[in-house]
Amino acid sequence: MKTYTIYEKDKCLQQIEKQIQLKKSFLLERKNYLENIIQQNRFLEGVKNDYLKYNNYIVDEKQQQINALNILSQYIDNIIIDGNLTKRDIIKRKKEQQEIINELKIIKENLDNITNKK
Image (tube, rainbow, N blue to C red; front, side, top):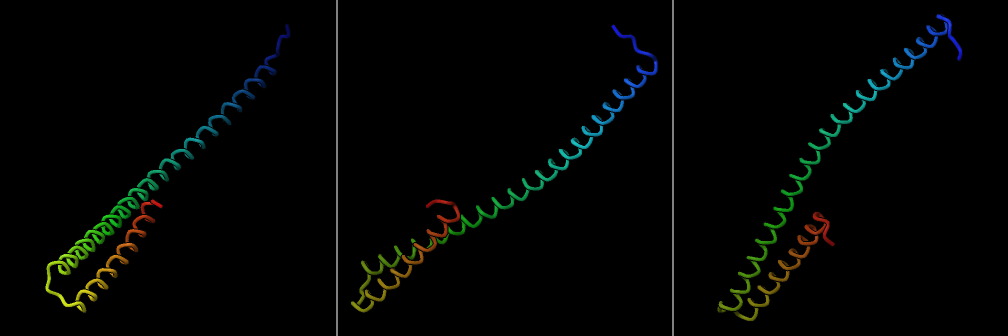
């Protein structure tokens, strides 16, 4: 078994102390980095929540448009069926109804794109 001199022991202890300091510095840097990441994630979480609110608002608006156009289409059906319309008026109402149906298709496609339903 080798015996170490005081100088060798001091040198070894200095080396260990240096390694401890390097490890402390590394851990402190890592802690600061992780705190920064946590702050960024909180910010990104807020952005995500804002986006989801906006997206839900748009989806609700599109759904209200669809509901309103369906009501209009049903109203035109009722006028055609119950009203005393001339053939010309019926043709005109059916053309209007087709325009409403086309607009409904466009809005539904937009809604599907927003909600990723394809």
